[in-house]
Amino acid sequence: MDEREIQNEYQKKGLKIMNSSWGYESSRNLDKTHLSNPGIAASGPNPAAPNAPISSSRSRKSFDRDLEPMEEEEKTRRYNRASTNGSDNYGVGYIDEGEYKNSSKEDEENTTTTRSPAQAPAHEDSIYKVMSHNFGKAKAQILRNDSVTNSQSLAAAYMSRRGEELEDETNSYDVGRKGSKEDNTGGDGEGKGVGGCCWLHLLSEFEHEQNMKVLVDFNISVWDYSKSKLVSFAWSMFHDAGLIEEFEIPAKKFENFVSAIFETSHDVPYHNYNHYFVVLHTSWLLLKTNPILMSNLTKTDLLGCLTGAIGHDADHPGLTNSFLSATKDKLSIRYNDLSILENHHCATTYTIMSREECNILCNLSGEDWKATRNVIVSAILNTDMARHFNLVANFVKIFKNKTPYECTANRNLRNQIISMVVHCADISNPVKPWVVAKRFADAVAQEFRNQVQR
Image (cartoon, rainbow, N blue to C red; front, side, top):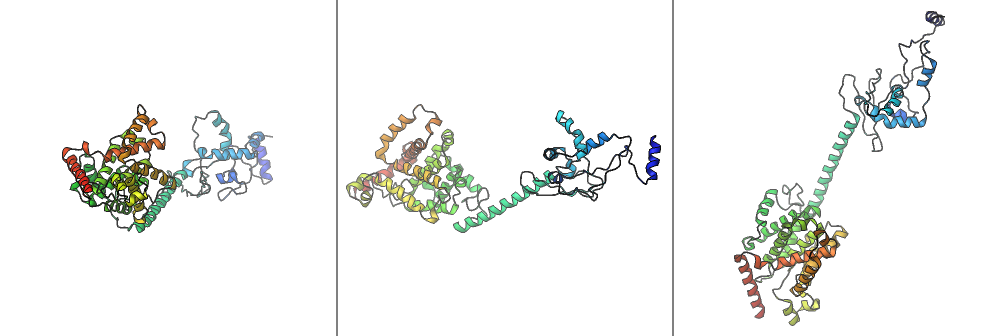
């Protein structure tokens, strides 16, 4: 019986045969959600077309191979590979199973060959794609219009939307944090600041740059500037060292702290707020002009160094430790004749920082707070001239012929370096220009004379 007779026989029985040249309507045009959950129906208005009769020109063996049931492992593998197999025009994960099965072995053998994207089902008006990515659940869906040929991929659309969400969250957080900090610090820094964080920044970018032009000069004449200007100079040095942002030091609290340190200054010729500032400035310059040293110190080392430098003589009465001990001053009784003034300066500095409006260490973690205190106490106590010769001898013995890494290997070694930096800054007047050095020398001499007259 030839093919024409077979067709006539089928027509008499009211059956319709599908010729092999027509193909067959696939019931497997599924989205990737269906691949992971067979309980979900296939997409489209006609999700499950009935199987067509087998054509005489198509072998049953081939037909059965194409429609053989998939194992669960095979479904998982296809699902995982869907992102590379799918068409960008229809979203990550679109796959035609029949086409994919016939080419999967070929793809495995030649991984360098780029597979042409699968075509979308013609009967669908829209395809909704779900992308789990690594985020745990669906986040976006794409509506496809047949007239659009360059539609955005689902991955690009999702990441774009995610970027917008992150930006919104960041802006909301910054606004909220700024508001809370300004409430605590008075909120009077609006419209100012370096980098746009008003509550952190005491000066504008322009003012900071102008300060830096003055501060990089080792020969600064401190008497030419007011207290408020010296406060702004101090802030610029902390900002240049990266401490304001690193430890989130509120601008108002920093201003209050430095002003309070300056207010402890007695009416004495030498150990007054001008000397406090000069030691801070010289310590900062010694660090700034030694980038290798700076790079091997931690941020808590730098914070302790600069804070200890500006507070190293806080509330100095213009008298020596020997005089206080000999006269049985209340400070000598309190500190048992051991580094009397240095202990008092350190205690005064921390008493000021214990006030909420002056607490520049308010945002430090417990560990950073302890590390910073260790540096500050060590730096201030080592400004005692009674320790000078031992300090120098130990410094040479420990650090001679050592590499920068070996010199900063642990906290004790770094404390020795910070102590030497502040101590050198404290007695650095003789290396200043003659005009500056002479004025400081005259002030020291006058202070000793005043002590003798008491």
